[in-house]
Structures are given as C-alpha cells and as structure tokens.
Image 1 (tube, rainbow, N blue to C red):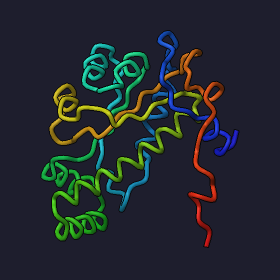
Image 2 (image 1 turned 180 degrees about the horizontal axis):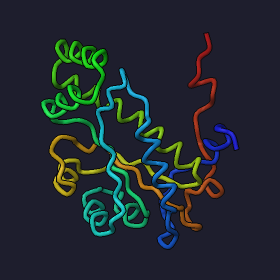
Image 3 (image 1 turned 135 degrees about the vertical axis):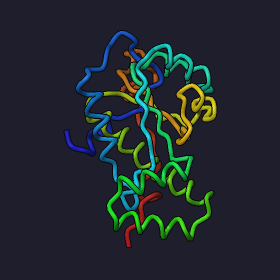
Length: 199
C-alpha cells in the first residue's frame, strides 16, 4: 500500500477495541520513528512519553476534557511535550549537540524572546505529531490526535518539570462499531483546487 492509499485509509478513531493488544515491536518502532522526526536545525526540543500503564492512563483521561473514553480504551497514549525549562534545555544543547548546531541555536536564542522561542519549539513538536499519525496507520494501527488535555495537570501526573505537554495521541485498534470508521463515515475534505495552488 503506498502512502496515498494509507492516508486515504486513515481516520480518527472515536472508539477502540479494549481487548486487542498492540504488539511490542510496533510500539518500539513508533518510539524510534518519533525519535527520528525532523525538526528545524535538528534542535529536537521535545519529549515523547509512552503511557501503557492503565492506572496512569486513567488519571490522564480524567484531565483530558472530552477525550477520556478514547484514552481509557486505547492500549497506548503518547504524550507530546515541548521544552519548557530553557536553562535545562541549554544543558542538553551544550552536551548533546555538535558545535555547529550549538552555535546556531545560541544565535537564535540570543535574538529571540523566551515566549517566541517556546512557540518555535511547539511548532517542531507538531511536526512529530504528523509523523506519529502517519506512522501509526502505516503499522495498521488506529490513532486519535488530542489537543484537548489539561497541560498543567498532565505535567503533575507525569512528574514533568522541564517539558510541557501540548497534546496527546491515542493509539490502538479501532472498535468494529466505531461510527467514525472510514467504511461508515467517508473521509470529508475540501476540494483539492480550493486548498492547493500551483504556480
């Protein structure tokens, strides 16, 4: 199946099969795929938290607005977080990045406000979400992207201090009776000529 066929097949799961486990090799592959996500100047200002523990998922579900059922049903929740503590991240930059990239980042940081730097980081994390959603369907897994989370409460539950959760992705196998399945609710998008311009 080519990439276009995969994207045509992909849908946002609203209900998950609570009995079907995700093979560990697929979870391991998803971890590596997210690690390899591209970012501006390869800065990688993120953390991906894979939550399989049902007790922790239940706590997160309770602070996920209208997404609680999906989180409780899905076998995996991936939390996408951006750098929040710039001082802590500077240590990462100084110890993990090669000199040329370190110098590049330091120049950007010197001329950018803290607020704008964090916006830049957040934009990079959204790239990873797109990669994660596409990778999931490529592995025959269903997924749900969720911005509807209470970020500060996620931070507390996950004991985070240097990163701030922005959104999450439920992953698993969609329930057969999911009314949002592509066979029951055909994909609806605006016309190509209204969203694509060729010059």
